[in-house]
Length: 146
Image 1 (cartoon, rainbow, N blue to C red):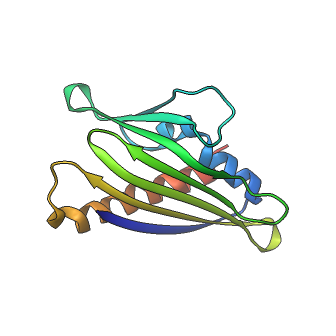
Image 2 (image 1 turned 135 degrees about the horizontal axis):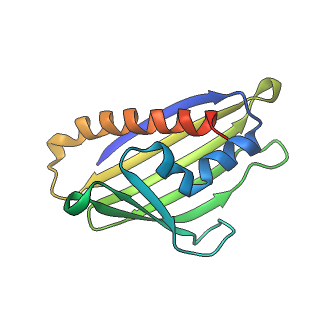
């Protein structure tokens, strides 16, 4: 599996950074060639399921995910969310942590462990680098956009 982690600082309070990162449909606005559909009714919590469809035409694939841990930031405590990837092509997990920081800022840690079926383990380093680049840009855009 390809594992990567990225950290960002945002000039937002932790509850707003959390909202921006966990409004799942917004990910489709910042990840190239991706559309996200939430398949369970709101509000988001443990058990929420959504699907990221990535690609074009016959080269597209679905990446279904389920929220398995949901702890929004509250009372100075960090927020933590864990997603389990349960697709035919993409497997693994992602974790989002949002911590309150000094001066009303927040710190974000995104961890991901991903496996793409049919890719040999020799591709893990390249997959981790690509994931860090794509999600690094996406997290930055989500934290900047309202």
